[in-house]
Length: 150
Image (tube, rainbow, N blue to C red):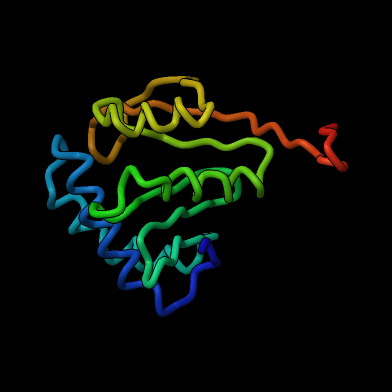
């Protein structure tokens, strides 16, 4: 079940965030994520966060308006549709979505391309010095009336 973030979710979210970043970004010094841990922990409650709760938090998506500030799924639960379900929730809330993805994180790029995102631009992340891609999705909302879609 996807639901809104609750304060009791914070420790599980942070564990998924830290492990996910370290696994997805081996090209970045792990100290970077450890040094930013407390700041992210403070920012999570200020963002719009949804969690996939299947007898505990298995993944989450953080949104700052229409910007995806984080989408992470715990390692044992990846490739089971949790990321797609969280993305569907974000698409229900916004007409456009943006995300930055490190250029070396090919699995994330592939995921977002499969979710109908396109690559808009490339830049260098000032904090890490790594190339990242700005990806964009125009969400197509359909209104269903009976068996027809408008």
